[in-house]
Length: 310
Image 1: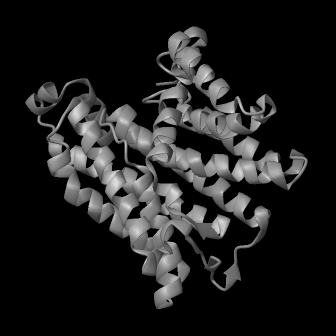
Image 2 (image 1 turned 90 degrees about the horizontal axis):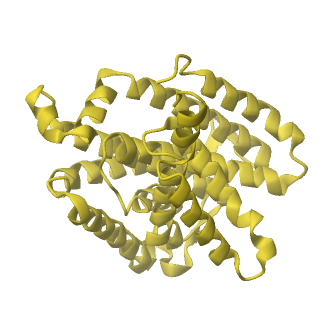
């Protein structure tokens, strides 16, 4: 833990305040919005994987629940978009709470396969229930409105996700330094030792899984409203793996690593477009080299080399 835990947060907020005034065009504003959305999702996922030590290979399924709640409930039932967002988050949290206890009795690759199966089931439901979800083709999403004000244009969405990112970083920093966060780190180190000192391991595992699912669902809703259209690809296996990769590259058990990993892996595919068909090969090579030379992730490796931090 750094002596100045909020220094990184202040830097992120300063960058977010300046960024829209220096970006050259709307393409880069759109990219910044997507970076911020992914960063919030990865923050929640890192609490689960990095701090609690519980893998999830189906986390994009919770994004799909939030996204399709924001698409289907206003379209088919006339719900207000904000109410649909809350309903989607509640549904994702409830599902996570229901499956967490049996899933987290598993360990290692059995746990990974169980979470993978959960994500695949959600994706299959979204693809097959075409009368509600539009099937593989997806469906349009009504505009988000807040107190009579309709969110439209990149500028509105930029400031919305910038606020969400700042609040999420602040909340994550406070969480990991609370008794709850210390309990998470304890069970990551040793579940047996955690039980000996009185930590209710199952309760903490369920709680952090639910919290991480709610993070993902809310940002799934935000993504759906921002893009204006949603497809089952948002909830597929490859998106789940991409999110886990962001956690690993940035640095597990690192709040600022979550943000950096999301920023880099959202921008990297755009930066590799000049490779003309070899983007995937270049992308995989960069990830492989990163893991070989920085197995703990970017932020923990740099912190160890130049000084301590989060």
